[in-house]
Length: 193
Image (cartoon, rainbow, N blue to C red; front, side):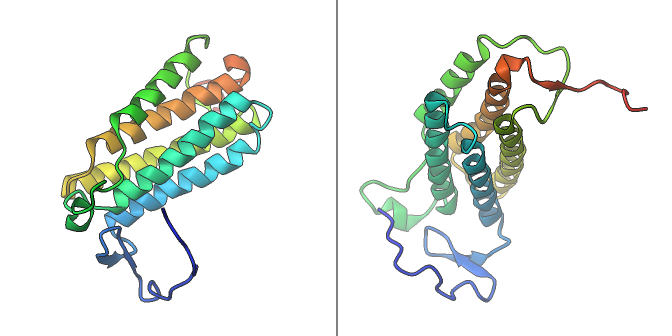
């Protein structure tokens, strides 16, 4: 369990931060950029949830995802080859296949009753959908950063799968919250020429 007794430590004043392994790295390190962007997506979900309070099922779904995103941040914060985490009986906290599979099952269930698309969708519609589209774009940025990190050092494959599915989940959920797709804002190619 995490215990925070002091919020500021002054340890980052010179532009470095600690990873889960205890290693000190620059705050612009690829790993820090990746988990920082995951945290940004999580913050937007907090705003989206302000607009899903009247739908207990959807709000619970987003609450689970917010928790998963903290798991993902912990996964990214601890390098795959971390000896300190490997020495613990439970090892490092990692995203697992079951979390990816849950996202896939939710995507399939949400998408089942949505009409097929004949155009791309512009972010918008309901407030919740608009914030989910914002979260989707941030999740895609996090994915790009994670792929870039994975090109330089090992990254949990389930973490990469999770972030890839997550942006799809946000897209489908946004459509679901846009009155089952009927309030989607469609792109009209060349309409403003």
